[in-house]
Length: 205
Length: 205
Length: 205
Image (tube, rainbow over all chains, first blue to last red):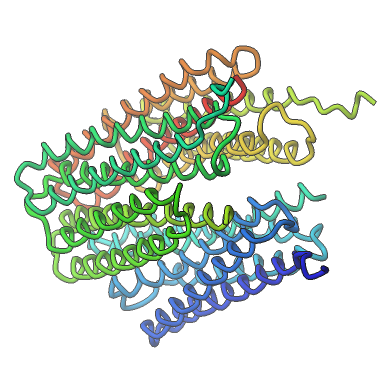
């Protein structure tokens, strides 16, 4: 009979596993941007991690659809899973663009964005690590994710400003503009996840 | 008194009608891309169908807001209607771009995307056709829509890669990049609809 | 004991305050586009208003998360706050682009969009002003917001069409294309807010 009681804490494990995969993805992206020795290898690795995140998301939604009782609101579980999946999707798509555009060297601003992205994903992981046992500690992580997004926004804005000032080749300009926008978008998606987490915590306070 | 009982099966008819309009739109788009004999005429036809889909969406939401009982979750009916409306909006916007950009001939990749879009919309229609009576058959259609989206993603990525390799005119490059992205986006929206459908089916299994 | 009864009408005041800030932002944007005498000053003013809207949104969500009883569906309050926040975010981001792109003079089409944006934001404010006491009057405002969005869409489409016909410098073309798209997006966000308002009214009729 006890078998019928859904192990709702499973959701927390699933979210933590997913966050771990996202951090792996962000490490691979940062490594690609820093070294740029074998971008194709990085691309394949990131695509693999992105696929793993798709499976995580699918598992969470499947479990959600089968659970009578959930540790927090069903729609918040769904939104959180979708927003985590978005983070990894954008990491993957930013990587794809760098390959498709035949970029030959990485600018300092792109490396800086890679660094901020990794910190942001690690902070999302920390927030998910405390969600089950110490939810009151989440707010601090959310504040940090917010300020990392602001930092990335500034870096991207300065980078694009410099691009329009210095780059005379419009095709290179198009490529880099999109690369910067994609990289910054990763931190936006981290902020979306943080907003959902914060609202979950306040609702269940 | 029976008149007070909402005819909830009406929703299924409304969704099927909307899917039929979307397939009409995809046929018109494919025809425009394949023949390109009278693009302005295609544009007007597609705009008309897009307007019809707006009315379908509006009707579904109006009915939703008046119904006490719905065949599946209210928010899923709303999301499904919105996601179907998105499919037709993007078909329309892709068409508008081709006209505004004064494109003179259609590339093989754009035609290929037109073909995938039509197949994807037809599969959405098939999924909606079985939603009421044979919901368990929906999963197969969703898998197909997913793999069509992957195919469109590959075609777009290869097309843009070729564009950056071959196109020396940056203005033509901008135009075609956006056309490919818009066309691929139609299959993304079909996938969004498929995800909602799949979750509805699993929830009500 | 009466202190425990949530002052739910507070939400209406908060939404009206937020709408007032958005109109301020739209006035500042229109003024910047019309005169373009001190764009940096306009940029700072708009950024400040955008920050104020972030605080409004945050306050609404905090109050939402603490309220047992809400004047209309919790998810609609959340969506409405988020959609109003989006309006101001896009006004801010459109302004930032004009600065970053070192635009030296404003085209007639951009001024026209600034005019439509202001009218659209004012209409959102009017709709929020009647939400509490005369909700049945909202539909007319929503129809107006919709037709303003159509107008903005036409202006943007014509402007981009002219851009591709006349502008030979691809870098200037990229800049202006994005500026027009950003400006039009403000009216899309007003329409999103209108759709939420309309659905709230019909649901509670």
